Image (cartoon, rainbow, N blue to C red):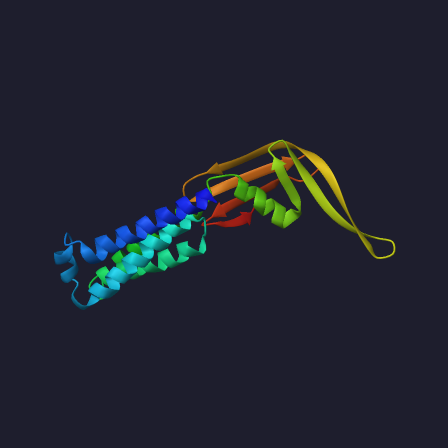
Length: 189
């Protein structure tokens, strides 16, 4: 409960700070006035992008990253209208934004890989040295029974490489599980 209150206070501080920087502070008034009629949309997109990004990290809620990505693309379009830029620069800006976004969505901790294995195969790995294989069997008389088998882990690793992550786990008596995480999505190989 205390952790949630601290997160709420931190998020409130970020909200007030971004309001102060974007609406009250006179430090960047000249640059903002140069945008002309695009000033209001630029300020709105900055406000939404920053607060959604921080909110996604503070509350560990990934859908806010998508809103932040859309806001960042909108900021780039607002700052550099497509008529003004060459197509190669537009493609480069969008590629940079997508690479940064992909890097932010890749998990840095192996628990994401363990959750993926659990959702895909029905293994629960609570400890790093053993996993439980959960199987549900329909017995005689249409009754359900669940059996749990403890399997030792032979080898397990999760490597994070900025824009992708690679997970591997080999359980005794089972095929090894390999997957790559790109932009928050697991792909088996």
